[in-house]
Image 1 (tube, rainbow, N blue to C red):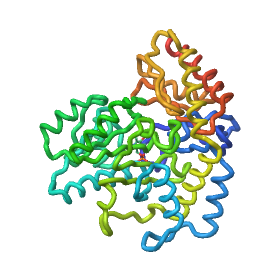
Image 2: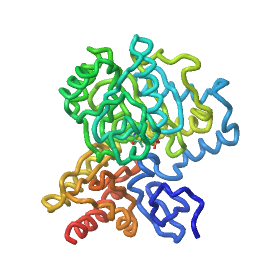
Image 3: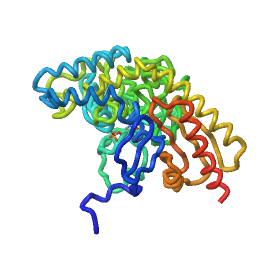
Image 4: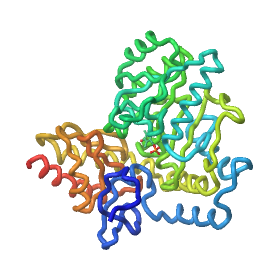
Length: 391
Ligand SMILES: *Cc1c(COP(=O)(O)O)cnc(C)c1O
């Protein structure tokens, strides 16, 4: 019988009934180690008591009011994010795409306020910024945008880690006023922007009055072992976008503003019905408190390095393994051939992973991952990769 669900996803035939910590159980009682955390979302794992009670308590009081009124949970979460990032303003929304859409709108408005009514944004090859029309235009993947033209214009794609390419693009298009990039490209295959490159881009944006907009939808909120991945480069963006892990699984997005980006938006410039409602902000506050009090940033850094080294050692010298890369618990294993089949094979073996850019096995486990659980990932995944490459 055909399902009335729109045919958007190629789903695995597995459905989960419940979880605890890094583990999920399916309807047949089979247990899986969640090495993907719902694509970097469930940062506290499953059924974390603190998050569960924050959501239950808030739901019992009030789930939603409206941005027509004060929302104290929203103010509190904005204060926490501002403190952790050293940035000034936060606007809430409901997803990563929406957060980036708002960042793009802000760059346009910043242009208008400064006599540039056709502001252009530089973005990077292999970037992933979302699936709305503007974020598809910012994303360089032609696979995702195929069939959806006309897309909004005003985006210029340049290669990652190539400062001269940015300078050249701006020479050809003087209306550039912002750069949008990921510190670690997630969907793009865990490709790192070098820290020197990030510092040089920051300097260039300062010199030219451009906005540096960093998409931390996947890399933010502790994933790489810092609150935000750009903090590894000791820089601060003008605009940062967050979503995935921020409320531990409850849908949320946020745009965080500093410096010349703060104060650009005024009443009427943007809005969202759901954005930052009491329920999601209570969840976000519980996530940030748990990350801090349970020292999960350190855990992500330490268990992440441990896992990366263990994978490197186990895969060393194996024909077909190109590289193990990433930071904290945002790791990729690039193979020399398409390996999407590994997702189903790993699930059969009780491990949830994902493959991005056809050839990169991606791991985004919950930040509560322990060493023994990292060992379990290696012990399950490495033989699968070996067999796959030998076949
Ligand atoms: C997932 C992701 C997005 C899109 O987020 P959605 O919540 O799926 O809209 C944008 N940017 C990055 C870096 C992402 O990883």
